[in-house]
Length: 267
Image (cartoon, rainbow, N blue to C red):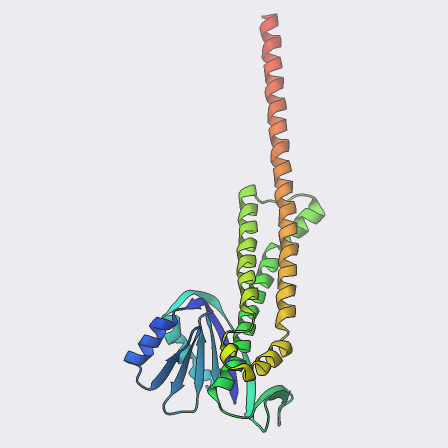
């Protein structure tokens, strides 16, 4: 069976989405909690968790079926993202809950000892956070790829064809991404769901470690710090270039004034 996770937006209005399912989509049962909305289809053993942070995690839903959910959920999304990021895992029913090799395929598989929605939710928190991190990892890679030519130009030619205003826009773009990353770092603390379900926290922790989430956050912030230093250097370079241009202008003006004074003296 499949467990699919998607990052589709910056955030999702769960209140409006819950109301939509309750009033217009009678084939589903929706259950709202503080930061999630659980959707169960009456005629199938499927569960979908929609998270306030703009992610969706499904259990038992086929890949060709999930898009019907996503199309509806996007209607209530804030700042939908153009590049949809997703991940997928296999899961199976077993005599214990663990991450272990699949019975038939050469992949890791989530084994769960019960079809409990609470157990699935405890694992879904981990999948939700992981796919959100994956989205930011994708953004960071795109930023590096986008601005690598500038770095190469400055290192090889000692100059680059970009204005000070454009550099400041670049720095602002990086700082904006870093600010969002820091919000995700705060989000990686154990969800409050486990205050009421402490016995399930071990499964969330198991998945958090398996997906290396804290290490990924640290790596992302480190690379952003490096980019900030590089573009601060670019900004300093442009400031120096601007100061040099002012010096040249002043020298030219002084030279013109001297020429006029000499001309007036002779004539």
